[in-house]
Image 1 (cartoon, helix red, strand yellow):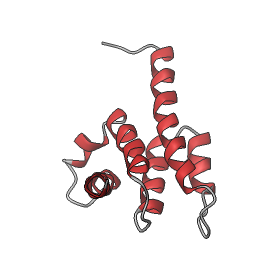
Image 2 (tube, one colour):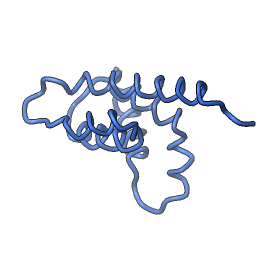
Image 3 (cartoon, one colour):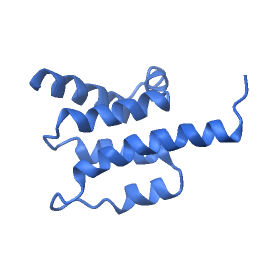
Image 4 (tube, helix red, strand yellow):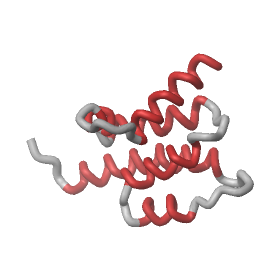
Amino acid sequence: MTLDREDLQAGWNQTRGHLDAARAHLAGLPGLDLSATLEFLEHNELGLAFDCLTDLGDDLNLPLSFWQHLDRAAREMRLYSDALHKPHLTAADLCRRHLAAASEQE
């Protein structure tokens, strides 16, 4: 099964929407530089944008919705299945941990 260009673009747009929604939670927080994330999004480097957002949010007490948006993006990019084949902690692993912790707090 092959995806045509329109299907690929629609998928990228959907994933980008989740990443933008997560980024919106960080906008305006003091001391955070979102320029790298914006640059990754502008160049359609969605996996790098995901990694950057996860890293930025790692030490912050962000709401469940931030982690849900990142979780949806990770699922769409199939980052969880990729993480199973890596011996080190990935951004997808961090996202999953924060999602579970935030879900328990809600």
